[in-house]
Length: 263
Image 1: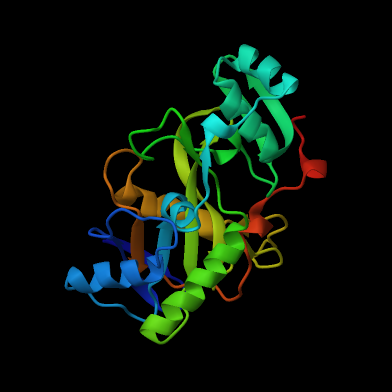
Image 2: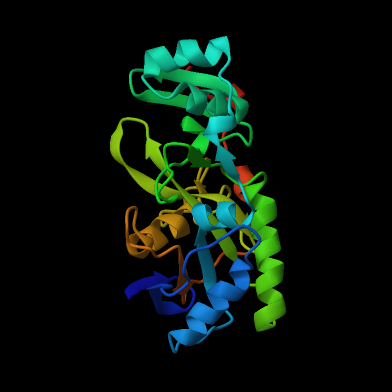
């Protein structure tokens, strides 16, 4: 549990609870039901302020976002990039299909702008924890992660009686820093980006640029219990967090290309 201070109401306690027992997810599975069953099977409770944090992998699996690399015929461009980045040309071809631009290509690194706007390695295509045939099988991101979050919010509401905030996460690298951190790629029922410009700091100065990436903070916190490897924990619940008002999608977190100062 993490104790935080709310300026209006004083101390409050945040709990980050891993959801175990969800099991392997297959195409067409109702992951909202699987999550609720896992909570009930763990002798836990669902409360009105709970935030559901769900990893991209089980969302993509349920939405059948699989690709069989054996069916992919690489283009000349993919073959050229594959030689540079030292990756499977079939994988590179699928990365290009999922991307609107190649940002950087170097040995063992292929950074692209995903068609949803994310700048990330390999367009988010994943070959870890995808089964024994990982050489020929890969998992793509959801077609529209914010839409997936809204659908999960509605599906959970049908089961628990109210629409809970939902954050869908994926792990990104960060410029100039080692390691990956979960970030929000989809969100519903909360302000993924909270604009604090116009507020005053403790000294009375007006905040001019401060916008808080609320959904990314939630994603990173949940990542402490979901893990990145063989943990088998694809979701978490955050309890007790007082959210700021509003409802903004995770797409609002993406900085547009015209604001990229490093190109």
